[in-house]
Every structure is written in C-alpha cells, then in structure tokens.
Image (cartoon, rainbow, N blue to C red; front, side, top):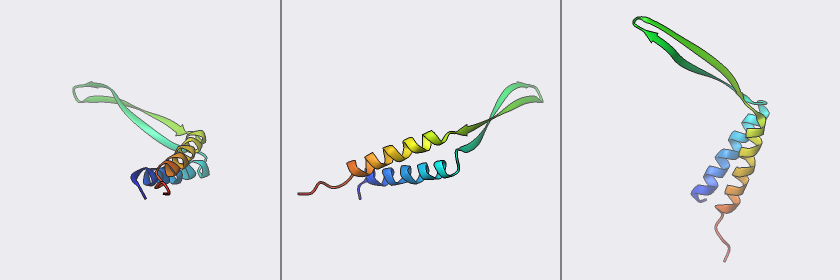
Length: 72
C-alpha cells in the first residue's frame, strides 16, 4: 500500500470512531490574565460534530482509491 492509502485508512478509522461516539468532546484551556502570582484562566468545552467524521470517511475512501497501484 502506498502512503496515500495508509492515510486514507487512518482517516476512515478516525471517522468511524467519531460517528460511533456521536462526536468527540474536547476541552480547550486558555490563560487570559497573568499579573504577578495571580493567574486567571478559562476552559472552553466543545464537541467535534459527527459530520466531521463523515467527511473524514469520505476523504479517506478517496485517498485509498487514489493510492492504489494502477493495474497494467
């Protein structure tokens, strides 16, 4: 298999995981204010939507077919 095919397979697997889990939650931390020893930060929670997983599956399938060796 070529590199494109391997990347496609990884995208397909990742997309399936995202779709099965109905999205993947993530937390993003930010340091907003830092004055001397005082540090104020915030956390932002989000969700990678399942549509991203579906897109990854589609792109992965395209890469798998693009990475196939041409038949002679």
